[in-house]
Length: 99
Image (cartoon, rainbow, N blue to C red; front, top):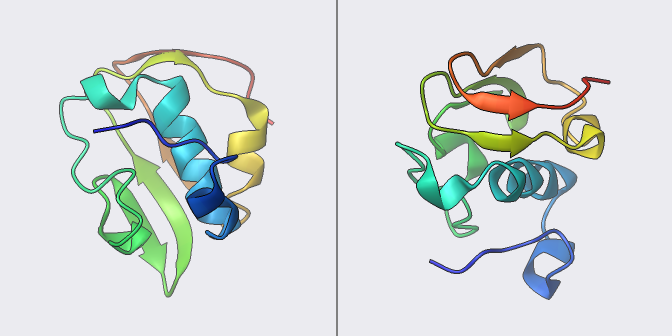
């Protein structure tokens, strides 16, 4: 599984939510998560990605507790999820300031 980044041409065409989620994935070593089902697969709707909950097509919740996330969450990632109301990353090794 190759790493995708928001600057890749396929991601430039993707929504801001895709780019935000891919940023989170890439900055927290997503290929080493315990469950990364569908993450970085742009042919699958983001609302079907593990830990992502939506209201319609808007990401409203991200629950990735106990999932071996490691790294720093860049602030721009969460800004790309304007409808996010719930973020749960407990029991991981994630740092960074939340906007």
